[in-house]
Image (cartoon, rainbow, N blue to C red; front, side, top):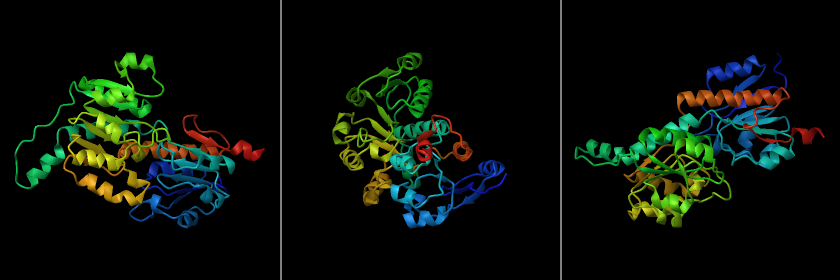
Length: 337
């Protein structure tokens, strides 16, 4: 196959050899442009992105902002394929207006995120960071932790990841409360979960874990008022999106001992660098476990998402359509018309 018109640029790091080989076997020219500074591709300016994406037909992206202004400067670009499932950083209206397609790697990383979520719940509940920090200082005093076994866990969101977390919690005989706009009663009955309103979930849960998409309706879903409903012995876990939680309110709640602890993989400062001091203050607390938006980044999870992202690109460049769950915006037919 010829690579003419099939130049695929990858700006996300950790794109593996198997995914590269797959693209090349489909006649694509693959360019790895993962040379962004420490902040990653999300820190690249529009000019820097245009320089890397010149003449690209496909773009495999992680955390960069895909704006209307950027798309206007990339006339050759046919498809934006996220290696991930969130797409709040992609201007979907602009994708459609410019006759392009936008895809996500649906179905590829929920196992990794669910496993990471359980790891965070166990780590913060058993006070592993506090314990190791004391041991490093020479203090081997035992700090009693909290079981997950038969505790009440509130799961906010019942998409693929929320369901995977609930399924794993069954092994701990946890009581699972779920808050969602679209309760699936058949699934709930099969797994033994209880659908409740958000205030009830917050009031009753020993652990609250967030797995909702970031939308105008869910922005700052966990704010000062929501945190005030939680037990002072409860823990907040966020592997969803930073914007779901008001990090300033969370910091105040933790400092005021109105919450037992938090485990965070995502932060508001990812989209608003001015809030970096808030993030730094949060992760400095001994009762906070933090990871750098890494929940989906197991070796196996990256391999799966890389391949799905690549296959989405190929489907569009071939003139077809990716799976319905992966295609989040498609302006190609409007462009042809």
